[in-house]
Image 1 (cartoon, protein in one colour):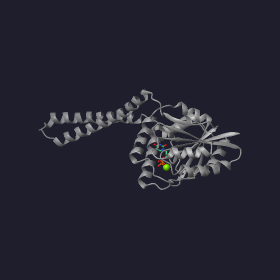
Image 2 (image 1 turned 180 degrees about the vertical axis):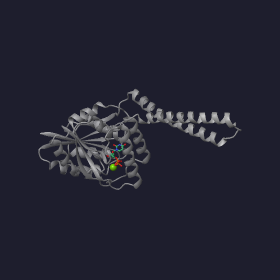
Image 3 (image 1 turned 60 degrees about the vertical axis):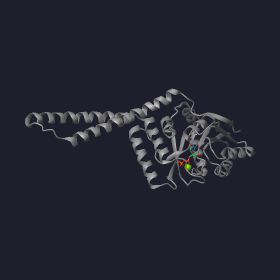
Image 4 (image 1 turned 90 degrees about the vertical axis):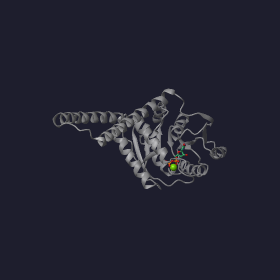
Length: 310
Ligand code: UDP
Ligand code: MG
């Protein structure tokens, strides 16, 4: 009998876990011919999430958990899940019911048809501000153009991975993780299901604009060096224009002389070039920072306590 594992990263989800467990067990028990278990990753929650998880484990040993030593972020929590999961395939989903469990049988069907990585694309994005939606769409466009990789918009982390894919993702140990891109990077046969993303059940999203901005920079700097290329191109362009302008000034001075003037031009040019230089330094710094973190070679997460599911 094939075993299906479900990985759920949880950060302050005390009010959602019970609901999710009920919904999941109803769906999975109705799915004959498979055994299943759930691996919950408690990502340093500061509420009663762990307590709630243990309560559920006490009545159902198919529920296991990993308690991380502090909050490592969802991306790292997911890797902890991959490292410890036992199923023939794994399904990753959010704890807040935004990823409806009723899509799971459909995913399993595609998996049986031979797809190794079945991702769920959302038809609607649930309650989300106009700005957040459009910024995120713009971001994917940029990432796709620069990274030469099909990063799909409207696809979150809700997906089913075959053992092969899990083993592949486990090999990618970078500390600054952008898992969504990693799934694209590993390749394999991808299948698609669609779902309607609901609204968060209880609590509020832990991804603020600032966090999303950081994740966005993470995404770009992990998959492409295009920004470095852009600053090179900008440098070439500005130097080229400067040479033309230099000839112009030189010839003009020789032919008609040059009374001292041009304060505004100088200020503008100095500020403009200063801006470009700072930007380029920032871009280099962004990459250097990543190198700095990766060379430390620290573990991606630390486990405080672990109970594997049956
Ligand atoms: N999450 C996590 N660690 C964090 C932040 C979030 O494990 O530091 C989990 C959270 O419990 C949820 C999932 O990641 O299961 C998605 O988080 P959230 O719903 O806050 O994000 P959104 O749906 O707004 O993108
Ligand atoms: Mg959510």
